[in-house]
Picture 1: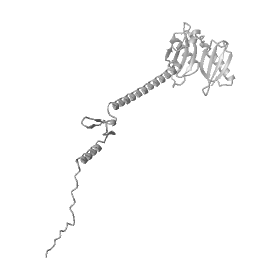
Picture 2: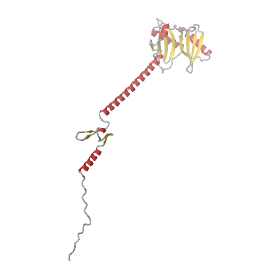
Picture 3: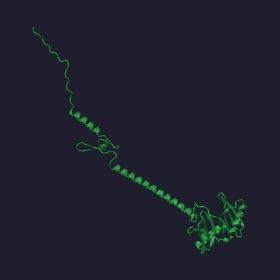
Picture 4: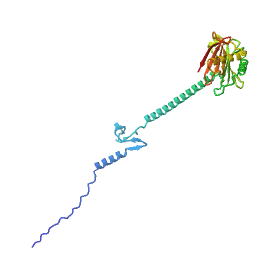
Length: 269
């Protein structure tokens, strides 16, 4: 009797080894990794690998070269332009400051000129009694070698006196409270120079002029005040003008004729 033998197949089959990547697939993978690594961010500037249209250049062997965004001569030129603009702005600001300083100095000089070139704006007004006015007038006349004076003004820090010279012109002389005298020959009135100086003030009439002015002021309902200025005038019908300072800063101006009769009383607020 013949026995049939059966051949039993294995219950499990051995898995076939995984296929190895082809050379083409490896090339694709390698190229993709290289492309991803080419994207760098350094100090805020992007470096990217791209075609020739995106700023990259392709050499003869297929190698790509990249140019950093915002770099090169254009970036350097822009930085230089910004530096020059900043310098120009600083120069313009300095020029404006210099002009403002010059204007401020000019205003200060004008204020000094308005006070005879020597008056101290912060100083107190000196005494306004007749003896002080006469003394200031005599000192100014001596300083300028004049023939007399035509006006005496009480200013901050001293007295401004207009001295009549021998040639018919006049010059302002400032007498400080300490007796220091200074001339300002440039501070003259062209119109006055053309017409000649005002008449010389007779210092012996100071008391009579003050009395007439005070009476006119009080008769007009104003205070007696204190003398702010005494001067001669060549206006028709007016020989003298006396300014009386009132409390509160206002002034009363009294005009007198040659006989010391009152021709006008005006309150200047």
